[in-house]
Each structure stands twice: as C-alpha cells, then as structure tokens.
Amino acid sequence: MLKTFFKRLDISWIVTFIAIGALWNTPVAYPLKIFVVFMHEVSHGLAAIATGGNIIEIQVVPQQGGHAITLGGSRFWTLTAGYLGSLIWGGLILVLAARTHLDKFLSIVIGVGMIAATIIYGGNWFIRIFGIAFGGGLVIVGWLLPESINDWLLRVIGFTSCLYAILDIKSDILDRSGMPSDARMLHDELTPYIPTIVWGVIWILIAVIGTIFFLYIAGGEEEEEENLDELV
Image 1 (tube, helix red, strand yellow):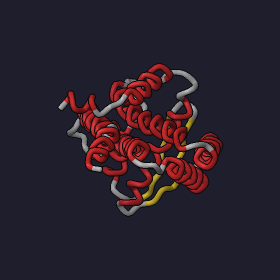
Image 2 (cartoon, one colour; image 1 turned 90 degrees about the vertical axis):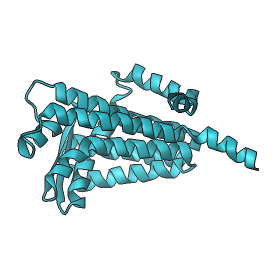
Image 3 (cartoon, helix red, strand yellow; image 1 turned 45 degrees about the vertical axis):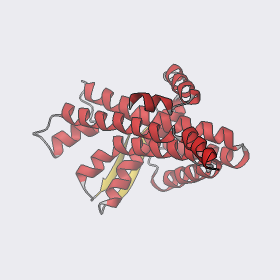
Image 4 (spheres, one colour; image 1 turned 180 degrees about the vertical axis):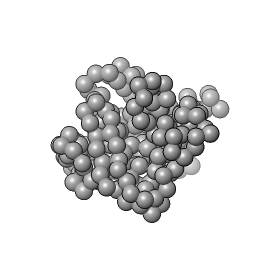
C-alpha cells in the first residue's frame, strides 16, 4: 500500500512539498497562510449556515489568527468545521488541480468567492484589504495566465491548506497561553468530559489521513492516463 502511494506521486509533488517546507517561515508563504486562516473561519460560518444558523462576521488578523462570529446552528459542528474545513477545501483544490483541466476556471471561482465572502462578512480592515487583493489576484491569474501556472498555484494552495490544518491543530493543543482554540472551546462549552488534547489528537489523525487520501487521489493522474493509452 505504501509503495503504491509513493508510486502515484511524481517528482512535482516532492518538489512542491520541499518548496513549501523550505519557505514555510518566510514572507513568501505568509499570504498562503492568511488565505488558509480565512478558509478556516469561512468553514466555521458555512457549518453554522448548514445547521440552521447565520454568519455575523469573519475577522482575520495579521498574526495569522481570526474568528468567525455566528448565530444559531450546531455549536458542535461549527467548532469542528474550522480545522477539518480547511483540510477539505485544500484537498478538493488539490484533486481538482491535479485531475482536471479546469485550473483557470477554478482560480477565478475561488477568487470571486473570496472577494464576495470578504465584502459580505469581512469584519476588520486587514481581511477586507487582503481578501479583495488575494481574491482579485487569483481572478487575474486565472484570466490571463496559462493553465500550467494556475495548476501549479492551485496545487501549492491546496497542499498548504492541508499541511496548515495539521500544524495549526498541533500548535493549538500544545499552546499554554490560555488563548481560546476550537478544541479548547469544544471542551469548555460542550464536552467537559473530553480533554482538549483528545479533540486535538482526533482532528490531527483525521487531518493526516485526509491529507494522505487527497494526495493519493491527486497523484493518480499519470497512472490513469497510462491505462487509458493502453486501452486506446
């Protein structure tokens, strides 16, 4: 199984992983991290809407933090959706970029969606400026630049979103500052009998398994193309 997994990943995936790791703590990766934080908060809001509630506002701060103020809906699913939502968004972007030729269209859709969410729900100056600028940048890239560049950019965004979900959960459950986190609020508000670290470990396991799954699906492009050629 492990051999099959690595066989499905070509050199481009390895290069992407190394590049993201090397640039993780540099200004180059900063916009990607803010984008993922934004998607994390949007996921909270979408979970609230899906369970009968509403989004009041979304805020993101330059220190890579943020919050989503929601009204109504399932508190359990709203809190759970942040980390797992950014994982799912990242995985879907990763798979669609790798397995379809819709890269230019996808960049435009993500960009327009980000601009719309920012205008409607953006609650502070930082996310308003960033959301419109980043979303607008994606629209321009999708409109003007070739599919190959859009494909590479979307893979990086998707991969970063998956990795950030894992690393963000880890940093939150190990944080001793007393600052609120999704896992801590879930423990304090709804499940006092389940420690914060347990929720963190559960989410990390889901995030790791989910990332491997999405990479496995995304990495199958070459193999399927070869099989198709054989059939023809």
